[in-house]
Image 1 (cartoon, helix red, strand yellow):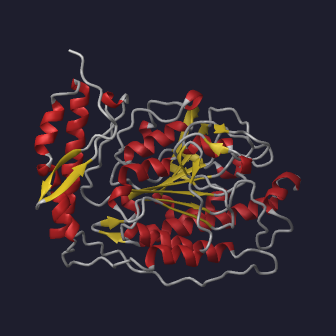
Image 2 (tube, one colour):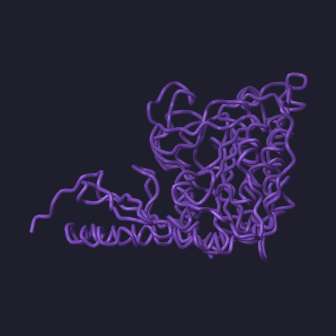
Image 3 (spheres, rainbow, N blue to C red):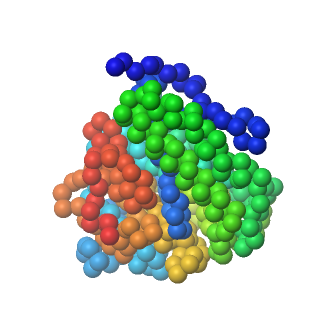
Length: 445
């Protein structure tokens, strides 16, 4: 029997309290589409994700730790992370399996979405990513449960972005610590407590699925078996969301770790021509950590310095990018800059670890991916990529390891692993040569 073709604008309709209500439908074969979505169940402490980025790469001979597995020692460039070593996993030996067409750009594209850069120009700043990045995959899965689907910030002043919701759809970062704070903790912020939350929308939404029930039964008879399965999953997702709303009304989560941070200064002017990178980073980190702790968002990104960054760091004779190309020999000035950067990454991890949640910490219930735009700045290499992972993902990830790939492996495997650890039911990650269908089992519990 040939099934009818349905309008994409079809809604299921009913009455609640004498008022008409309607709910949308998932993408169906009857709409000439084969994709369906499911909502996360939201049980326990929510899983969160953050990536933390810095530009211009590292020096591999001073970056890669000695030893492997649980028996390893911090390398010279990772020394600032000594206080969080047990919370840290260093991943080495992965490469971006894509053409290195844009220096400082192809690497992040490969790490964050496993595909090539589109609209390739002569530099990173006029090129775009061709797919959603990891943070936005997480935002798509969990963002409807929070005030902000995601939050993007950059310590270095820039309009460039590494966060993409879709091909070419960048999410520009906020570069003002004060503006970021006001957005999250200004008007509209209510500090969580133990009192029931009364929201008149809850009772309405809780009864919508029952109201459209007859319309739903009728539609089930008009579609294919695979569409019926998609509809059932869609209804289950709506019902799960309504149950979450009801639970929130009756017994809101006790987010005891949520504390409104101190407001940052309105301006952080350069000092002797050098941006106050550490001061700006720390107030931004504090804001994002509390945004996660208060469940204002479950996906965020913090760009410490942008790709091809030429920031003039304290004590450095020239800009960072210039030094990576011009400083001879072992590049001691570049090494000092990397140490400053790693001290800031350590601060971010320590702040996440300091927030208590239940019997653990905020860091236990999330994943942090730390990375750069290449392996070695001078050559723009994207093999043996510098990758750091922290957080337990609610018990799904091991911690305190050095995973050294036994043979060159695709960096996409790490993205696949992290998304699966966060409970997102993907079957593949990346595209083209960057496509993978399995992760790194050694990192999983």
